[in-house]
Length: 271
Image (tube, rainbow, N blue to C red; front, side, top):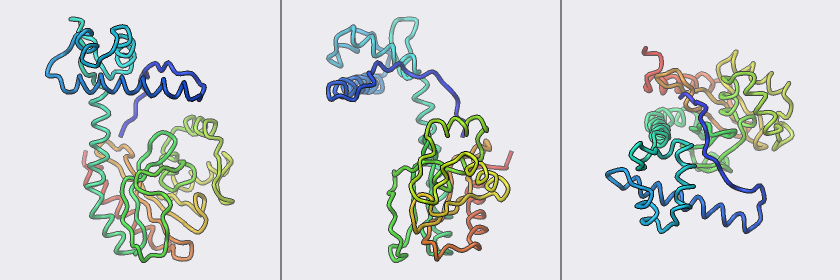
């Protein structure tokens, strides 16, 4: 999956987190959603007046919100003066579709890997500075309590899947990540310095898999392998989570085999 840098919508929000500002922010997003919802249901482009009346908004307010949505590519302002949904929504929809496809394609191999190890198998994707768990196969009798449910998030540098993404990133982007996050730790084993993180990422690049040695949660170790799509882009990470005393080195080859099979099913290496 290829991530491109785009202009972002202007957000007229104060840095204050007072209740009043929070309420204003919620109103802005609610109104923007109403406009997008209206345009998505319309078979044709609409004039500003039509949008304002349908959404029960003042024309000036509608114009400001539309200007922001146009700037972000979510809405397109036509030469006729009318508005319609923009291509940015199509791009976001394609990203969601790709991730849903990854879940569907990965499901059989996740089940196979779970049967081989009898441990929790996770499928995760990157979202900003975090990974998000989008699928999991687990055994309730494994004795391991998973703290992060499907949809749960965790910092890139504290997870095996997150390290896959960092290892594939440009060094400048890694440094930017460090500056943004400060490499905050969760346990005594967390990697909280750039030097330690770079050493671990070098391991990932050399051996083709990543590991988490109780860095996110004491008592739990993880290993992860990358999943690629037909473009060669890193689209997800497949990982095994297990109690420290159960993790086995032999699972690395099984994990990498499963991830490679999923990648192949997504078209990786066929061009």
